[in-house]
Image 1: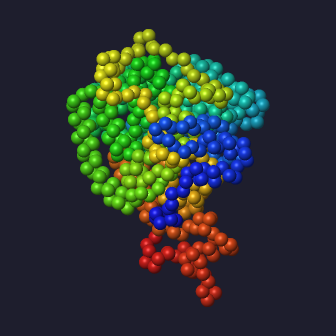
Image 2: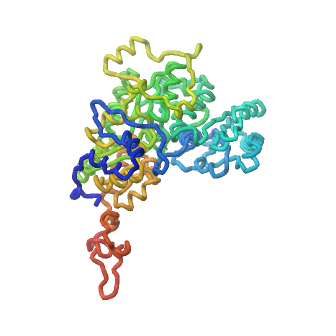
Image 3: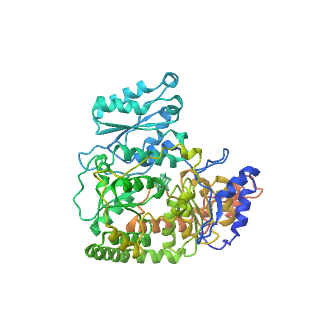
Length: 567
Ligand code: CFM
């Protein structure tokens, strides 16, 4: 059972892989074999990623619309967003993700609204442009927003509604910024395509509209940070303590006006490489803003990131302050970490999350001495696994060709390198690197199983054979995992907890994992492989607890295992 080490063995990863593939038809097994890789940190082997999920396989992925509307656009809280499509598609538009906002007094916040054109059969047959125009007018009359975004769901593309022309016409009619996103759910193999479409739209339609920079000595953006459970607030508080100002967090608790001037900063820090690398790259080309990879998940990772940012700004004052803050924060964190580490050293975690967290959260588990036995993304690309060095070798297939690659050139007036060539050379010789995401695999142990777009079947096999003590994953598999007696930490929404970023967040995370690993509740769940020939789950539990029928009565299986146990 989970929570203890006694039954843990070290199964041969190659055998685990074979066992996972055994049940599949030959063609499926062949394809999945490319997505289940035994790691080689020194020279990460090629992994199959960002390819179509095989029909019939239960995947955790979402759709392109979810990636655009829900993930990247969603948190821009005063941009009025209208989903063009049937009403059911509006689901992802309404607080399904814990991207928290705390708009300042007097600021508008549309996050609690779900705006949808409610396409009916009529529009599917005769077209929905008229209804969309009406919806935009209606929304404008009621809310008088600064800007409106229209986001397409599948039928819009199928029937060929020209939402871009509608947006243009409405922009003229209303005199505000109206933009459209062709992010139909089927556009790509996952939500990843939706990130790219959103990046393009934000870059074309919002970034650069306001050239007035915030007044701050050290000024940067945090890109790819969505304030899940309050992470962006934790990061902002920490950076503020150090004296660093964040102009725009894309997109976490951010206003339309903040995004408009994102191009005025000196540096871009990229948290989630998968969802936002496009904007980072385009801002560098057009405006000359360099980007570095940052990671505020994990105490050691946070300290490393702060030092990297300080190095870029090259100021003694900032460097000293950063060291002071790290020392203070670590002093508070260390005793908690050590206490929890003592209880869980050597326990095993597996992580299957999205496009960046399956990497970042490894640091948090390692902070408390835990080992990562397997990890994988749902929809990341090869560069997120193997590092950006493989970018030139990634095959462009029909699915990726579907997504527009913007042609970006240096802005004739506004392009301004943030560092002189001499400064760049000095940074490089000091070991500083820009655009340097090395991916997940270099940081994982040799032969660790790296599994892309894991299926429910593979997850079950992994649990059955490798018996991890905890799994970090999402809502779609959380309860399947927990029914097998293994605690599952939701690393998308954090269940109802968080923040987990920066030092304060790390403490929250250690405590949460500690609670999950020490609770006795897992003793009451019998995983399927321990059941044998029993008639009902009640009976199995009753007999396991020594509570089988006594004098015609059945002892409740919910009774604690050990007398005196507190549950
Ligand atoms: Fe980036 Fe994200 Fe992620 Fe992502 Fe997501 Fe998310 Fe995620 Mo869920 S943007 S790739 S599309 S870090 S919603 S905040 S948790 S799958 S790992």
